[in-house]
Amino acid sequence: MANEKRKKLTPVQQEYHLFEKERETKRPIVRNCVCAFLVGGIICVIGQAISYFYMYFFDFTEQTAGNPTVATMVFLSMILTGLGVYDRIAQFAGAGSAVPVTGFGNAVISAAIEHRTEGFVLGVGSNMFKLAGSVILFGTFAAFVIALVKTIATQWGGL
Amino acid sequence: MIAVGGCAKEETEQKQSLQGANLLRTQTSGTAKHAELNQGPAERAASYLRGRDDVRDVVAVNSGDRLLIAYQIPHMKRWSRKQIEKDIDQKLRDLFPGYDVVSSSDLKIFWKTKELKANMDNRRWDERKVNREIRRIEKLSKEQT
Image (tube, rainbow over all chains, first blue to last red):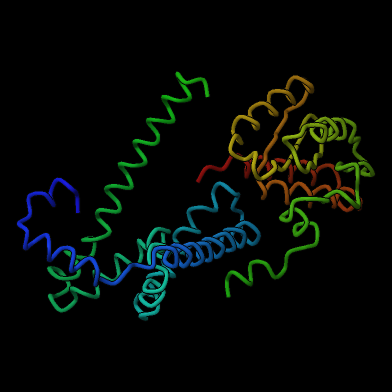
């Protein structure tokens, strides 16, 4: 808690805050980072292997193999989410499974499963992109900002 | 399964290419020297590129007024891939003004050019077939989607 906010607390609240701080379960940050790194890395290796598969067996170049690779990865994560496997991976890997593009497939399908009892139109249809919607919005916005920075850097920055 | 299947049938030369080094250990020229077509320009282009430190492996073929060059950029230098590609393309166009130069750092183009060169080396393909394959690779290198 920020110092500014802590000053506003009553002595009893401050005492409780210290009491809580001593007893709360510590987050294993290093372990979480290692797990995320390993699982995220494995997902990327699988993605790279799929990319080489498309390049080797079909007429895709390094540049064009990206689209079918992303589609395949998202599709696989959707299947795994439906089977309940991806949830277990996510419990272990945390951000390692959420940050790659497979996390997008997981966000779509998990929301659809969660709201299926509300019906196909108002349940699944309207809630499917509840989580994934923000991924699309901020992903598009981030891409725009990065493209803007790159354009400025290359046009006027001499890069 | 897909991931394993993707790697299962790779030929030795492609494995070497993925690993990076020693691609041209068995054939040091990097051009289809023994083919019926004169590979002088391709040989010169390959030796020029091999001298650059931002190029790892090179393979080049030429037929008629077409010169096809595929090369690999070292992994850590791929940050400035576009710039290297632009520079190499410009240099090759200056070096071979009478040729329609097609250069690419794409791995698929590299594999295809390597395959074409091997077929030319073994004298399996005639000029018409080579030209057709070069045109096909050129079209593939310009593919955007």
